[in-house]
Length: 397
Image (cartoon, rainbow, N blue to C red; front, side, top):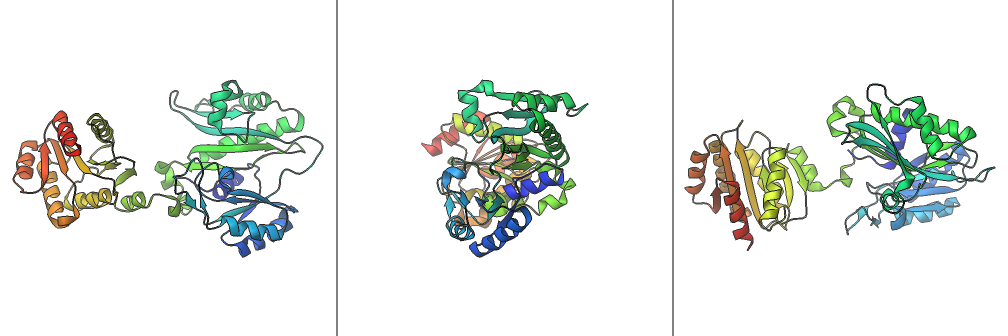
């Protein structure tokens, strides 16, 4: 589950991570009111206004601006709230900005220069260990840094048996070129950040930039936080942070129906039971000259109601030109699935206007094929993988 910047920062702050403080607003007048409160709390007289959407690169799209007065806060808030923000990480249509974060100015003058760093924590799937990735090149896309100056990216893997050790936090601060008070503050920052990552059951923390202020304080100026969906049962309060306005509406609806659905850009809809089989089915579609339009796992219960719900979800995508149903009958019998497909098709009638190929393999697959073939519906049955691929190729050509 992705969080907005202000939500992620609140979680970091709960675990002692120093953050750039701010307040959230949904209108220009509320933005002015919250800016006044922020001034009272922090003494800041300049304000950074940030669009709150689940996408990076907001500054490039005009979603991050500096206001040097309350009048500018009002004017800029009017510009950002309600805009369609297009960034390198959004679709061509962009995302509607519903809220902004009014943050304190932390680039104030002082005895030393400010410095920006990059830091993230994530799972290294190759080693099975959590990893801190960091760089002196903060404020830039990490992909650009990796491509142009890979030697400026450092990693620190954490042994799960011991957790983050003091020498590792010190090594992070040393590799970032810090000394004195900033060095000490960075080691504290790294420990607090890693504690927050583990205890919040996050799958990703990305802080870009981590700022060394002019008076040598270390703080998170931005925060991209993703919580592991499988751990949300331990964090019921985090569920309240979900903003479905930022999510694909079809995927949200599928989730409410108990379907595992991911929207893709292709032309062949997939209805499959089991994630592994779903991946193999998408490969099959590619080999047949098509492109998968979705990942949809109906699970072990493929009765008429569930199949009908899956049909309706898939057909919400106007780019779908055919549907491939690929079911392995292990827990559920193939003949029961076949009857569910037939019943769902009859219930939906003219709503189904694309060819359907059904591959059923496993328990009672032969009975299932007879059910499909004798139904009189515009459904083509297949037993083998290659047979299904050939039929997909035929309907697309």
